[in-house]
Length: 386
Image (tube, rainbow, N blue to C red; front, side, top):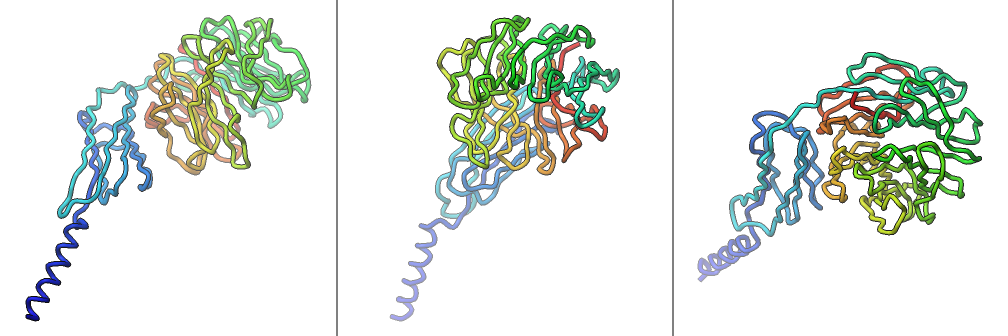
């Protein structure tokens, strides 16, 4: 009788263990076709510390709990995302949930063309605009004034450079334009406010910029000669850092219209270039999302974000999906990204403290090159294809 009772108890315990699931789940990401080359893989879920790394083979994530697992693969030529849902636990053994990618052949970024950037190498209160070829040669000082010249932006045809300066008074910022060699520096904006962040329309006929002339930062559009400035943002928040889409129909911009606390809540939005309705929010995190930059084919946006701590460079599709971090140095600020002419990489300003340099990297964050490599601040890169 006693043996029967003990047997029933053991049977019940074993039965309970089996019904509650004694096995485990794992998520396996397969990367077909990479043949040892590195790609960026990001895997996220609500209950797992996010994984983001350059890998040369697939990855397995053991002890996967119930959740949606989202995997994103980024190369120089693709950005693809897939997901799988893990449910319960198996009664015994291991249940594998597989996410499989067929990674297409890649292309290397070949640095070409010319970049302009702002540097304080003439003194902390005397920023100047410099040009440098993408191979690091031909460093040229384009502006030589007592004020600070910053935020250079190439015109689409590469013959003009718009920039911001305080040469007309330290209480204002005005937008100027000059020829590619630094000659014919001409003032475009007039007023007692801060006008900043010039962005050319794709056909070169107009310039979008942010201005505080109405009291807070707003987006304006003017003709390329400075005439007929028109406010296109709605005035309900601080709107700034415009970036014109390649087809000319949209402007991406940064706004705090959903609130801004001490931690910061700047997000990236899209609006029609003529200021008509249909504002679309692309990012939704309680941190700073800044510096949107369109790929030349209009499919993607680069931007910088502090959502993971330090400022880092992210990529997303132009509809706001597939937001993926591309730089991974937590103690190093990386921001102000701009696309390479071939869309296979980007330039950005990166550094610590008061020492920023202009870097080039491919679209996965590999093969980083320090283009300026000096002990000063070098920021605001803009890249033309020749």
